Length: 287
Ligand SMILES: [Zn+2]
Image (cartoon, rainbow, N blue to C red; front, side, top):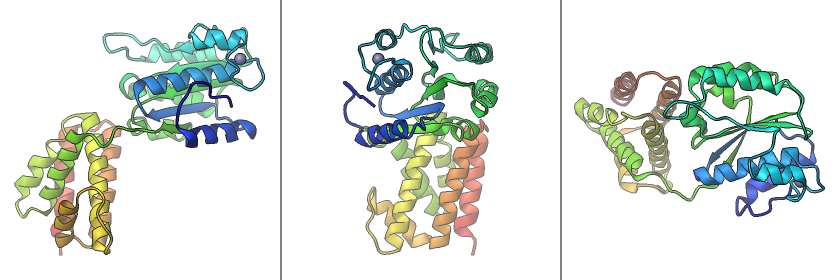
């Protein structure tokens, strides 16, 4: 595969090149991480690849490539979205699915691009889309971009291949702050500290990221427990270690991941906060 102007991400480029060589390019791709602009660039690039009629694809010179590069190719459809937040609603998805069964106009393939799905593709539309991803029409490539693929339904993710861009943004400070509060709450003798901390999970994206950070803090604690070094925060790791055993660490990591699944399944954040607090307490303080 020809990557032209796309910089970095050598690992990802290697995977794509290998898949292309083996003629095993997936029919559905999720592009995650990186910046919104990087995701958009890679989506355009893969769309060019899919329609290119030149040699090493995308050649960047044929008519298909040039049109695709300007997002003006008749076989490449960028979902438009509607409403103030540009949501891809069920009707748009249904239209897209119908269109996908019609043969391409100029190229050998049709491409459908759904951008920023964590914000714009609601669960109801994801469900509309599921069956098509399961039994995709011939010669169609679906490309979804999102910051964090965990905000998509597991059933969508399992039917697509994910390519994560390198991310230079380190853990979000706010999310890490919330994760630290929860970690300290976990080992605090007073339940109210933990409840107060889990209540900080009051917004979806923040909650997912904070729980990611919390998983790292717990893994750190586990490292210290087995005599290795903490990578993220040695003070918190040691505080956790004083209270937790190996099996408790593992239970807490699993609970944290369960909470993330609940968030993805659109369970109310308030309910999740209370549930998580109760579960953490039970695990840590039981004999
Ligand atoms: Zn070309």
